[in-house]
Amino acid sequence: DAGITQSPRHKVTETGTPVTLRCHQTENHRYMYWYRQDPGHGLRLIHYSYGVKDTDKGEVSDGYSVSRSKTEDFLLTLESATSSQTSVYFCAISESTLTGPNPEQYFGPGTRLTVT
Amino acid sequence: AQSVAQPEDQVNVAEGNPLTVKCTYSVSGNPYLFWYVQYPNRGLQFLLKYITGDNLVKGSYGFEAEFNKSQTSFHLKKPSALVSDSALYFCAVRDPSSGGSYIPTFGRGTSLIVHP
Image (cartoon, rainbow over all chains, first blue to last red; front, top):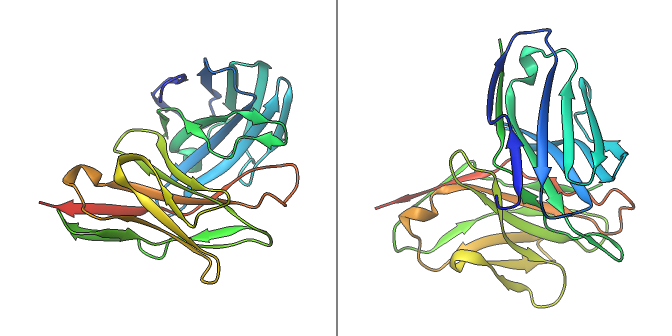
């Protein structure tokens, strides 16, 4: 988890409220990712970023938006939280090489979100 | 398209015995393959990867994995299991010929339980 922090680490919120999760890295890596982890589904990609202000959707992006205004910060926003978004959210980073991101990823400690 | 399967939800092994956690994959080209480990309430940690070269890859904590192209498998192994190896293990695959997204696909995870 070195070099990657996530905040908050735990959050309970009500259905319909907006929620923002923050990922902060000190590694100066170009690529950042948001995943959610649910039992029986493994890790599923929500959104990713390949540079400041450059983001793209993953396989489960509905209901989520992201922003990256600085290299070190990648924000995930649930505009109107629903119970189906109760999950553990992980941020990951990877370095860039001449041909793209370094193959392996490094993960933050996770945020446990409960939507009631 | 790329996909990965971990056919066992749980693997039980006695301490001191060899362990194997299975992974099979499907890609259109030559794969990049990864193993990650997740301890309770922690993020995923990179264990090892196969990119090219020797089919037997050695990684952290005494783990190794064997790439078998004919069987499209990348099983994780350790000669002598420790109770502290008990964790959730994820296999991941990335098809480097898939274009600009460079996003790996993760398996659903296998829970390894090592009994004293």
